[in-house]
Image 1 (tube, helix red, strand yellow):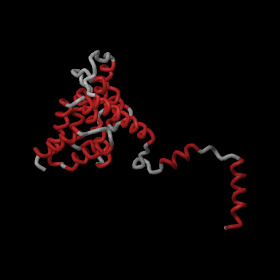
Image 2 (spheres, rainbow, N blue to C red):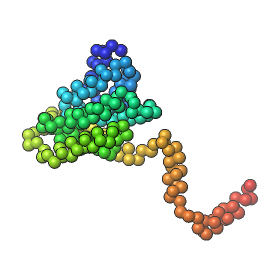
Image 3 (cartoon, helix red, strand yellow):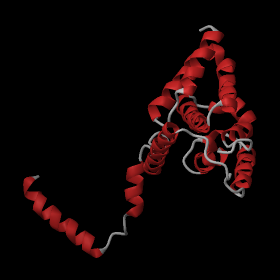
Image 4 (spheres, rainbow, N blue to C red):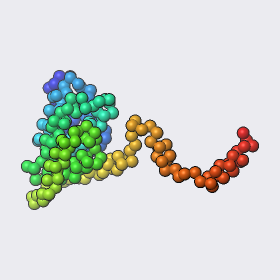
Length: 219
């Protein structure tokens, strides 16, 4: 794909992002499909983070979390992928643009951004520990700041959309708590049941003998 065409198409994709899994996955697949324009596509992310609305910036940050998840699932060693290398290089800047200091509504993105870094996101698996610590330190500093006294600069439509997307993010966060990584441990449920079994007691042996007597005639 021509770099100019790729940039135009991907910028439109970023501007239409929402909190849904399908929206994030579509953007991820576009990035992973067009290897020949990786640097152009990545630069679009930084560009849009600098100029977009507060809602869109948070959606882009959520999409980057999905990108990390896709890299983990697709590659045996995703840390060598260009996207992972660039994310490590620019992660603090990305967080600063997601929760901007020069924007009166920047603190609206503070909570969800912290959650993706420290609780529900995949950043911890690909972003270096010192980089995560620097990003978290910036967010902790911002958390000490009072909310701006100026009114929120959003239209009614933007506020309603943000409410819907916050509900979607909360739903996905709850789902991730119960998610099981069967790729990492195919025997997860068996191991969990085995670990919760108590030591065999005398009554257990008596029950087994009784069950054998019942089942024996049919063998």
